[in-house]
Image (cartoon, rainbow, N blue to C red; front, side, top):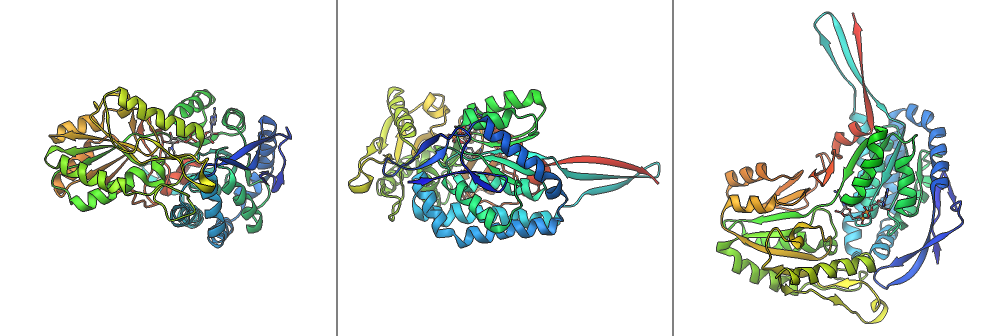
Length: 479
Ligand code: NAD
């Protein structure tokens, strides 16, 4: 049984409580490791360590910070196979996905911000009255970074890397459901020579550790990725303390397929955007709107392709692995039942999958397609975050937009059409932070990432993340 420890002040430490939580392998349903059941006392130690490290780290020349972050990127790359296996075991995702996407992206996050900081400079300008303004971008202090389970190391490093690059120290909490690669990252940081206390990783439950980070008076900036309800809770605590906040929250992303699209391309990509990572990517398109002229043709081809997807042991060559936990499996399946109550017809899937052998107790769900639902019903309005999509026909562009924009969310949207003007027009009308035209999940780290409406507040990515993790200070000099 592997025991995970906290990483505080450069050391791997047991939790103050001495208590541990079970960590499950979702593909087998068995406990395979234990994680610290930390609390406010461990967060306190992490804050102390970060405070002690801050002055030196923030004054460390940026080339040196860059070198250390790039070294971490190198070590993640060198440990690709080990980290990918750990991610797949912890999360249930296919090993090939972790190997191709999750771990390379975690390394890319460190390399991107390790090098971005070399090009990040303050601005200045002359003003009337013979004066010059310059604006310093100073590290804020201790950043609190809280991340979810769906892309564990990928999203954990997405926050930590820019925070550290900008000269902050960090107290971070990975999801208690998928803590393993964050633990392995602490070993990598030690090997890379990251000074003690610059990054501190405290494992444990959200309402204990996450809450203690959010409430801590000496953590002035919080970057959170997770559910909208948790985000609301964090905002309620952090806003009256005037903390700087970036909240990346839930989604219910529309995928609008016009009759004039490249049919084969739209079909192939929609299978991916629906079911990649078992539909557990905040950017997955869960509501598929198809123009009536091609609705039946698309439906038949989509159902045929989806029925051929394989669900199975994530360590084998499968399309879908396990969903992340038993409670999550139950939640997703309860939405299939709700959809039926709301008048939906299940065209494919809809059930849990029971496998033989080592995965017989694992949490698997068939990729599921539902049609016949009103766009305002709960199934079409609430985030399911699993391998379940709905199909809905539309006639006009206006109707598609009305349905697409009808939810509380506004994270990402996808448009399929060969008409350039229409593509741009619809993209401008979609209320979402990210729009893909004739593609999905093409991610460029230089672009701002985040959602509108209840999908979040603020943007990360590119220089936006360095702006977020620094405080601008204007200094005006009379010449
Ligand atoms: P979650 O909100 O349950 O948990 C996220 C993190 O917050 C975990 O580390 C958890 O321990 C912690 N947490 C829980 N309660 C807390 C509290 N009271 N105070 C502070 N921290 C607390 O989310 P999840 O189930 O891990 O992840 C799935 C959700 O994340 C989905 O809604 C998905 O859309 C969203 N997500 C959004 C993005 C994005 O970029 N917008 C990316 C990935 C996932």
